[in-house]
Amino acid sequence: MFKRGIIGLALLAVAATAIIARQHWLAHIRSTPFEMVIPMSVGHSSTGNFKVDISYVYLIEIHFHQPNPVVDCLVGVETNIQRCDGYTSVLQVKWELYDDQTRIVKDGMVHGPGGYLSNDGGFRTLGSFDGQTGRAYRLQLENLKDASALARTNPTLVVHPHREVLYRLGGILLFCRAIGLNVRVGWRLLGRPFAVRAP
Image (cartoon, rainbow, N blue to C red):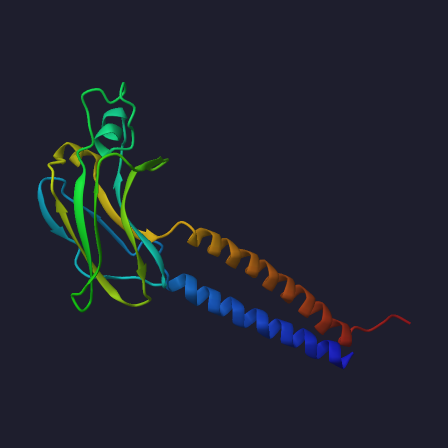
């Protein structure tokens, strides 16, 4: 009986520690470490410094709100010749990512067709990088081609963890369910040593 009580207490202690650690992690993580509306006319723009909360692969994307067939063609998401008759992709963006020591971490350029649609609108991925926890980064963009026709879509530069992080979060939820099972089993084991049987 006493041994069961010890096991029960141990399970409850593990559950409590895991719950506290999870709450601390969720309270500090940001799923979108950076977001900023950007101009689409020819020229340079900079994000200023931003930090990431977890070491992971981060995507650099431009989100175009309120998509329509014309916008889809201008962004390069839609490539159907008939639907895009008279409209071609106007995106030609060069980007450079710097760390807090002003060193170039990664660079690239996007042009031509590409991108994807979601319920939130159209997205164009500029590139990706391996972010390190607590490290500061800065993005420098240069529009090489006038894309001011897309200004009405409220183009927003977004930096966020790769979508695979959602699967990890799903794993955390499964872990939390296991912790909940630990709590139930722990209480049962802890309660049995003190249970009084009826004569």
